[in-house]
Image (cartoon, rainbow, N blue to C red; front, side, top):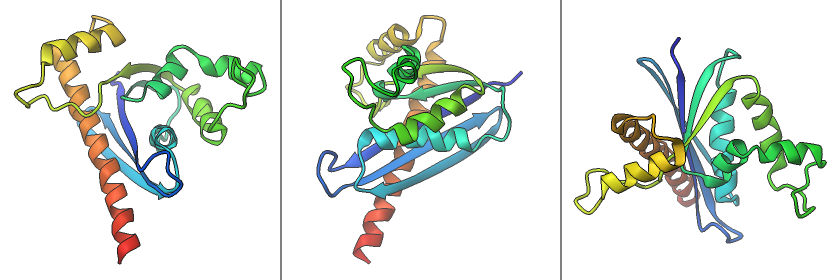
Length: 185
């Protein structure tokens, strides 16, 4: 059975400011097939764009019970699913351990519902990595990838994850560029 790969990224120019532009990108790969998704909005946050990227990718799926590998450079997103923060959020009425309301519930709730329909494995990737830059220590980055994700994945697997994350990042940036152009023209 072929595993579906989903690579996502989100970004926000002027994050933390009242006026900003956010974008998200997702790459869905199933065997030889590939689907690219992107979008953006204004006055958002980086975390919202990271969540939106995965939510849009999961919403694009037509079948349940798929084997899926999800790749992201968002520690916020990865830690929630890998450490199952959402289980306690749901038990505690969507409050954090410090009794504060969980942020971005409007995205987390439908995303968690979609994730639960599938057999999902999460992989963390270091974002904004140029494997071809002469100053990039790819051996060290591969070690970090294995530290985050286990040692059963090859260097080629790591390399592909980085390349696809860069593509998702490019899509997010294209979406932000489009919003900026539309605001000017």
